[in-house]
Image 1 (cartoon, rainbow, N blue to C red):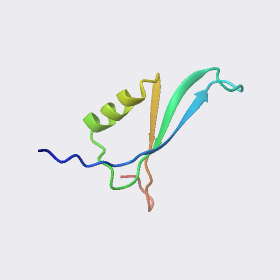
Image 2: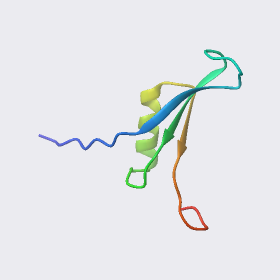
Image 3: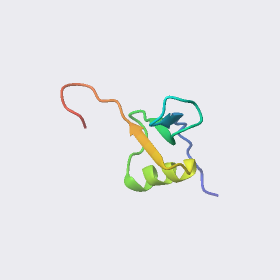
Image 4: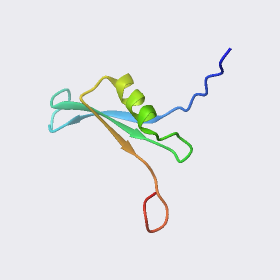
Length: 67
């Protein structure tokens, strides 16, 4: 039996390009922690789960240069 490791992801679904709720384009904004996997396959799989036109990933960085 394979063990599945779950990494909860904090996220918001926002209405982009509008000033009114429930209008514009929906987008998922995901806040990734340092320990989350970030390879392309994992990010694309996460975006596919939302099934929205746009998914944005925000990652923290410390120091003067991004990772």
